[in-house]
Image 1 (cartoon, rainbow, N blue to C red):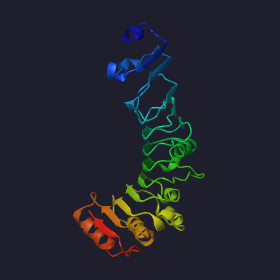
Image 2: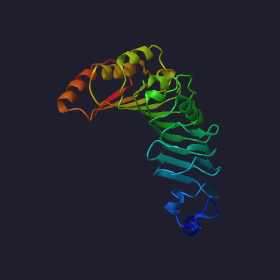
Image 3: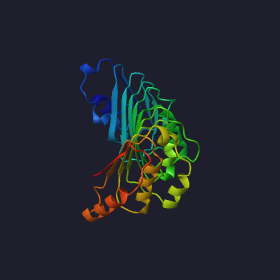
Image 4: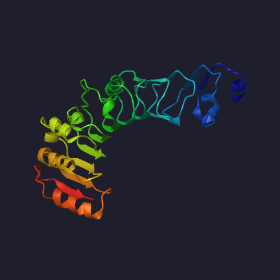
Length: 277
């Protein structure tokens, strides 16, 4: 491979029929060669593929087509990418993505997908909505997203989702309306205006009334909004069994003040145990 690259090869078609008979890593220069225009990798027994903090230097498209692929990790560094990413992996079970979302195109729904970790820094509403549609069958989702790319149109319904970990400056209630069977919710680093919060909480998501049993909230600061968020869950989560509040970022004095305020809140679920860490 290296000899071909040194001679300025423009096209490489590499077929790996038995991954056990080849070195675990292809030469890094394969992805940075300036002469290479078209690279095709075919691995007949491939189940786990990862691009970790890499930049595919001169590529215009990264096209992943694999019926055998079960785990796919794409972390781009720098996060902004100049090439498009096309994913066609119908049997994918675990998907991790970190980067921009402007040129990422899942082809159809990933019907076998069970868990996804999505970290989006920049992008368009249209492509973010396209990605949500592609992963709407998952059972567990970790999502970090900015309000600038939150779809203003209708989100797909995540019927199978039972666990959500959310980190962003968007009111999470927008997502809860699309997750009717959610059982566990983890909230981190919440940051949004109180007026937006109040406007969105008029209609109660059905998962709060019937399914949500465990909530974990990481509180970066103690203020009126944080108290309102906790109070909202205690008022409306009718079958809640455990509420865990982490205050690792607060001082000892702030923790005591927050604990006194939180323990005075009323709760609708008689089974709910409140744990303050």
